[in-house]
Amino acid sequence: VYGYGVVGARVGEGREREARAAYSAHRARRDVLARTARDLGGEPAAAAPAYELPFPVPDAGAAVRLAAFLEDRVAGVCSDLVRAGRGPVRREAAAALREAAVRAVRWRGSGVAFPGLAERADEG
Image (cartoon, rainbow, N blue to C red; front, side):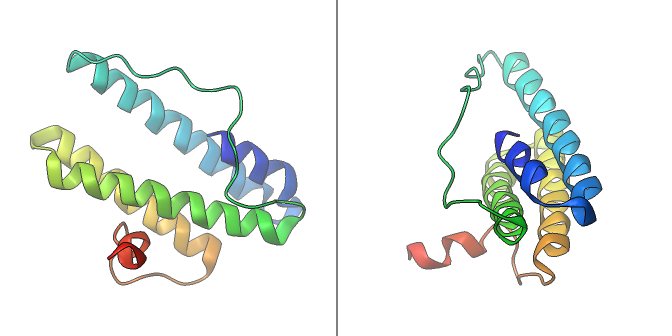
């Protein structure tokens, strides 16, 4: 959610609507995950006021790269939850993975063979 605030501020008018839609989608998904964690007996960590970005975002091109990076990271986390979850939790994680993969393609202009696993390719 924080990252999309940065994306929205730098992406430019041509993709501002797309950034706003992604920001809203991430906020909604965050709220669902927090509710699920509480329902399972957990307590979600409070959001930090700011986060360190993976690279500088001085312009629209970097903002687009950040958006794709964020979606790839979300897809990776969701793929972990798909593997670990059962029932409704797994279905929600699969839906979130699909949504992140689609947004990543829109930002990047191309897709990857296995969304959610691509970021782990260099970890092996």
